[in-house]
Length: 256
Image (cartoon, rainbow, N blue to C red; front, side):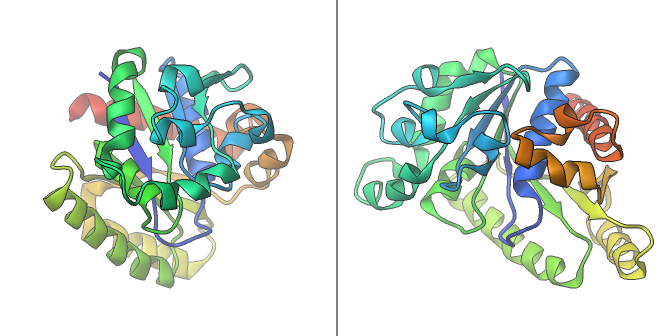
């Protein structure tokens, strides 16, 4: 049975897409079968997985509107080693089109049931806002991975996200929980980041992943080549950290 995780944070620019594609590539490198779903109309996770969003015949938009199955719409990223259910600008229209349909927040969950046995991990890159798209992701997920920078405002955004997850857990998805907080773009030389990191560990204890993703130029450069950093430069510190994180995820799931 596939374990489904949303990578979510209601604050923009915290590295959600970078986390999603690099974790997907890291998991593929350690022998896991992975499907990466792009739920953001910008399609950055699609492009960052070596898939041209402009060339896609079918996307997650078609799956949500039930005009295609996951089997029909997914593509395999040869370079990255995982499957991609991509997105492009069409997806922005899904918000409006889903307003009046039945089971609108459960569309993705129903579609994924068909491929449940084919994957070990399904990773969903969510847009920063709490939209119908994000809701579809949260309704089918077993848990949420929260990438966050160790900065003051990040703690405020985290409070909002925790409240959202509580609401979805209470009303729509009893399985939903925070799997863990991932500290990203971390620079140990900055005192404030160290202090916020200590606060996170104090408040959330074992919900904070042991792995820390450092601020890394190679990770930042990789998207312009249409690749995750793990594939673009496997020897870089950022890539090595994501592979360690992938191993930690596998261990954490075994313990669940």
